[in-house]
Image 1 (tube, rainbow, N blue to C red):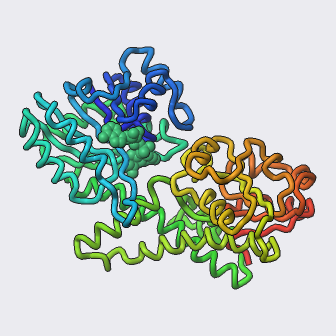
Image 2: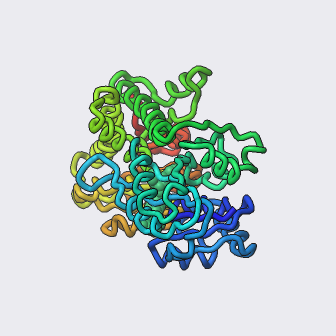
Image 3: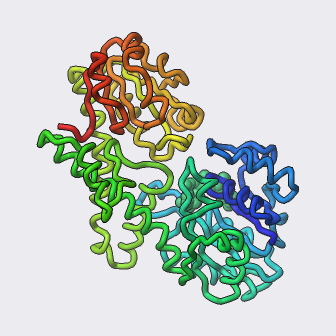
Length: 436
Ligand SMILES: NC(=O)c1ccc[n+]([C@@H]2O[C@H](COP(=O)([O-])OP(=O)(O)OC[C@H]3O[C@@H](n4cnc5c(N)ncnc54)[C@H](O)[C@@H]3O)[C@@H](O)[C@H]2O)c1
């Protein structure tokens, strides 16, 4: 099939490359010419394991290309909308301006039957409005179908998650759209990937509901961590105990400095905003607390660091290990690590940040911090080292060797990723979030 992917960020670039790998003819369209030039040269504009190879294969096969012009995409059978839906600057709701701009640019070009498929995460009710507008403005009229196919990929595992998803969700209004989606994903369906075929609203909700669920688990674990801190308990051991219960399971229970990234925080807030618009805010009121618990963990990390600086942070040096919101990614959107680094910077601390992949993105977002690719250089002369993103190279560092470059051996384990005994045996004062 011929496919267009509109918006080639973390989601769209991966989706375009994976669709080409499945044998489709794919054009990725993005408003950012620099991004398009990089993709067209076979270079992923962000850190995502395996994506460079997939891009190179797709481009070499002639099945994958990138452009800034919507006209080049006009004749595709399916158009996947993958543009960003960030949080509004002045509110909790999602900013849908990119989605509307995409559909605005696309609609007048649609002269033949096709399906426009939303993959971006949007508030429930958006798809019906988009369908009305598309069918009104497209020359092909009601021959243009609108479907919703939410994406569940995880950054740092995006290629695998796209080629071997644990489920597909098709939100459709008629059999024609369902047939087109079954056709485009036929390789995955024949591999046995389960599909839930449902209406547009349920498909839109599926993604925010999944993120709300995950955020709630993490924040409940961290809320228990707050109790552990005052009750001389250990949230790490508690998480292990809970995770061994098969009814609970161990994923998304990791205590620490909390969640971040371009999805969980803004999707949780957008669900609150949409529920309020729908008059059912009370139904998801607990998500407000989920967000508050999450943000409190960042403040707690700052408090512990300041305490270790004898309550007098001005001009003192600390090292922050991690800038990305999670290991394996260079995404710093709403990153807990960078947020803590910036809060310390605002208190007058000399903050030195180290990250294996996210220094360029972090430097763009927070140019006022100093960055080091080398962990030992970042920690040189530091009075406190905070581990805030659990990259394996940080967790595996030798505390004896690191002790030779810092000025005081004090570590804050914000991800419960360090071997406490090993660090204490090496003479470090070990502090962790959630351990009394
Ligand atoms: N990143 C993830 O892991 C992930 C996972 C599932 C769902 N999502 C959802 O997917 C959507 C995209 O997320 P992302 O992380 O890829 O965002 P992103 O910011 O990385 O990418 C968005 C891209 O859209 C482009 N764009 C903006 N307006 C455009 C327009 N009018 N026409 C063409 N291109 C335009 C931007 O230049 C950018 O390259 C969001 O709704 C997000 O919630 C993201």
